[in-house]
Amino acid sequence: MENSSMKRIVITGAKGLIGWHVHVRLHAENCAARFCGEPIPFEIMALDHAMFDDDMALKTALEGADAVLHFAGVNRAGSDDELEEANPAIATRLANVCESFDSKPHIVYANSTHAANDTAYGRSKRIACEILEKVSKNFTNLILPHIFGEGALPRYNNVTATFIEAIIAGQRPDINPDGQVSLLHAGDAAQCAINAATECVSGILRPVARDIKVADLFSKIENFDTRTHTLSHVLQQVRNVTKLFTFIFNLVLYHGFSSPLPNLHNGRNRVNPHRHAYPYAWFCAPSQHRQVFRVSLHPHPEDGTNESDHNGI
Image (cartoon, rainbow, N blue to C red):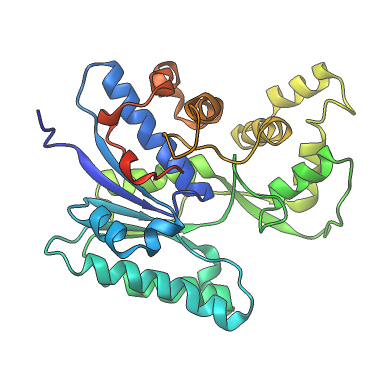
């Protein structure tokens, strides 16, 4: 029987940091519903770079969509001119397809605090936002600070992952003693985007971040290193820290033991990718769903994910 209440959610940039966390959380909601014998709430259309660039795949995904969570973007390029043009070009492509349909989806745009700056990247993000907010009356400008979390790439605009990699390698990077960063976990950013879409929240959203000196961040991560501290010391550090640093402690474990982000669903030339995805997906899923997330260890076509288009995250 068709589930009339199921929302069709499109994720662009689904292989990226926040996109992957969004997919995990939506998938966990579907798993929880199936476990309880209830209709699944989401039809998930996860678009990676190749699918976004494919005219037919993009149009098929967007047709009938209730919401688009837009994380596809560029934060570095060969030149400032390329960078400034990249995000508006991506936004224009998305806008043109959305405008071809009578019903416009709710668009949640992952913007950046840098959009307020007069830099190539800042202008690029700001102009992309201006393009997309004209598409639909339901538009959320999600302004995000520095994002960290499972799947972040060291030495790629991510200070937390870079520090963790350096500590694991026994290195000490150069640190600006006056530097400061505002941190938000990718899971929190993902949930904020999901809530905006499911609760039809329009306008500007600024998730609360945690400001910390860069030197203090490095020091906190060092305190989680079991090679230089006893396990009891590390556990005591975890007991005494806030939610933010609990996330960072878990992230240290992730970088110490994991490979790049796995696929959630069957893809071509893969053998049971769930076996590899499960530990990460289980951890990144909302805590209330972890006990039932194990049902995703095997493919379920009815879980609402567009598996036929090999859309692994």
